Structure formats: structure tokens, C-alpha cells
Length: 268
Length: 241
Image 1 (spheres, rainbow over the protein chains, first blue to last red):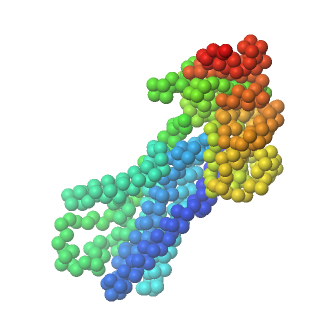
Image 2 (image 1 turned 135 degrees about the horizontal axis):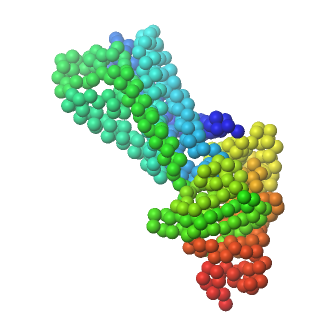
């Protein structure tokens, strides 16, 4: 059997794992709740939906972003789990390259996360169409960025999963890296007026900020312009090219080392 | 090279701890070999190196002539293994697990349709074929572990304490299956149970502190030392009465 057929086999069974685990459905539910909370929040707290469909689209991007972060929960145990639960004694003693096993797991993870992202954008589009009878064209860009962001987060999580002894460690380290460390550095660079597009947290900002390509316009829908003018820093609207480049760097920089490390890792 | 398993000057360090010390051993085809030694003697380390799970610090090992370091996939296609108490994916059923592993081992769908019921029947898990493994007891998992080692009919079986967690009836059944399967295969069988080894194997290799202390037919050891137990105690440093 060719290595390609073995890859297909690994993808099939790993995808089956994602479909059968509760976490997929828990994240789907959370996406739905977050979108519903956004819509209800606008109706009840702000007296109705904004005039600008792009503004609601930005606010509803919380769902797709949550779907992207689902990647972390999907892949934290992808490699570490084989060592932690000792299923590696069963899997790694088969005549198949570890590179094939890791790639199969990665592709299956991408497929599972794609389900989440597609679901999140379906909810977003239905909501926008129900309110405005139109969907901002930038939604397609946002969808593409969100998919790319998800698989780059997946790759980073794979890297930590290949390095750590426990699945939980891989999940926590990835979350801290993206949400705390990268987020903090992004804030500092933002205050200093320096470029920060290369940070993984900033790359993810593009998912919401692609709309109309103008952050101020969107912010003005939420905050009175006189207050918006008092911001002590400038929000740099991410360039799509920069966002894509950053995500590809994290994808490659996460996946390739995880392949190398897993190939070298011993199961004692 | 016609030998099933050839181990040449295998040395393995875990940091500063010497687990295998220039271990050499050659096992000819279709022999059942017991691998004996006290805890920490290096049995599991040896078996894990043979299965490609660990890399030796130095030395070489061959399975059916294939070098473990440079031809790992070919080596793994020659063996069926139970290392420690096997853990399975709880979300799969035995049928799905065997199908998954069989495909990774290059078996066709037709082969799997024919072979899965056979090995499941061997280990008496027919009623559990389509139940998720998360519901299985330790003993049931070990029986499934035995089924997966036999699935692709490999010429070499490598077992590390395969009867761990089994009740006495299952141990007897396990032994019967291994003896039957071992008639036309090489079985390399690590265990602490001397009586178990004596019933399954004709030869034993005894190691301690990573060194081979003796490798002979059980009947020769019994003749020289009085019993396999005495041979084990004397060779591993505890004098017999």
C-alpha cells in the first residue's frame, strides 16, 4: 500500500475521531450562543441593529474567531495524546511513516475545524441577510482569512503537542502564546506605533477588520466620534497580504518542526 | 541473514542510566524465545528498540534481515507486538480498530473482511465486535491487543508481559493462542512468569543490568541448574538453596 493510501486511511479515522468527540458539538454550540448573544445584545442594549451591515458583521465575527480557536482544542492531544495515553504503542508500531501519521492527523484536524468555520459563517450570513437582506462582500475575504487562521493555529498547536508530554499542556501553552503573550506584545507595539502585523494575534484581527477596510468607520458606529478621536494609539488596519503572510509563516513554522520532532521522539 | 532477530552490541542510555550494555543476541527462525530478567533489567527497552519506539545509543538490530534504524517500515511490517498493557482509541469499535490497523499494514478490504472475524473469534470477542472500546475492561483490551498482533499474520511476534491484567481463564486461553500461533512464527516473549515462559517457549534469554547472562534451551538450563527457576536465580545473582 502506498504512503498516500495510508495517509488517506489516517485522515479517515482521525476525522471519525473528531466527529465522534463531544468537543466538536460543544464548540458548535458556543459559536451559536456567541452569535445569538451578539444579536440579542444589539437589540436590547443598543436599541436595534446598526445601520451599517459591516459593523454587525464585525461584531458577529466573534463566532468565526471562536471557531478558529476550536482548532486548539481539536489538536492539543493530536501528538501528545499518543504518548500520554500510550496509544502510541499501538499506532507507532505500524509500518507507516510518522510523517504520514502527523500529516493525516493535521489534515483531519483542518477538516474538522473547517466544519466549525463554515458553520460560524453560515450563522453570520443568515443573520446579516435576515437583518439587512444583504451580505457585505468582504465576508468572503473574512471567511478565507478565518480558514487560513484556523489551520495556522492548528499547526502551532501541533508544534506544542509534539513538544509536550500532556495534551493539556499543549492546549494551555498555545492559548497563552496567542491570547496572552502575542496579545500583550501587540498592545505594546500598537502603543509604540510600531508594526505588529507579524504577530499571530494581529493576523487573526484581519478576520473582523477586513470589512470596508476602515476601522474608524466601524468603530464610529459603536463609539461617539469625539471619544474615538481621543484614542491614545492608532489601530493599524491589517493589510490582507500581511495577514496572509503571517498566517502562512505560523502554519509552516508550526507544522514542519512538529513533523521533525515527532519523527525524533521516543516512546519509552 | 536468515535469523529472525539479530541484536548486535546494543547499548542504550537514558541520560546517565545504562539500560542496555552491549547486548547481543541472535534468534533463529520459528523459535519461541522467553526473555527473562528482573525489573529494570532492560527487557522492555530491548523490545521497544526492536519495535522502533526507541533509538539505541549504539549498536544495531535486524528483523528478518531488515535494519531497524534504516528500514523501520519494513521491520514493522514483519512484526506483531504487544508492548505493555495496550491502550486503544475508545471512540472506535474492535472492528474499526482492526480495520484501521490492517489498512495501515497494507491489508486489502477483502483480506480484512476475511481476517477480522477469524482473529476476533480466536480471542472470543465476537459479541463485542461493534461496541466502542471505551466500554472494555483491561482483560478485554488485552485480548483485542492479541487479535491485532495476529491480524496481518506477521512472521514475528514480540510480546512484553502480554498476559498482564488477564484473569486465570483468559491467561490459559492466551497461552493456547500464542502456542498455536507460535508454531510457524518466531515469538519473542518477555515475562516475569517463569512457568508461563516455560509453557510457551523452548529457549530463554536471561538478562540483567542490560547484559545478556545466558541464552539456552530450557531443557539444557534445567539439566545444568536443576530447574529454570534455579537457573534464573543463579544467573541473576541470587544463589539457589
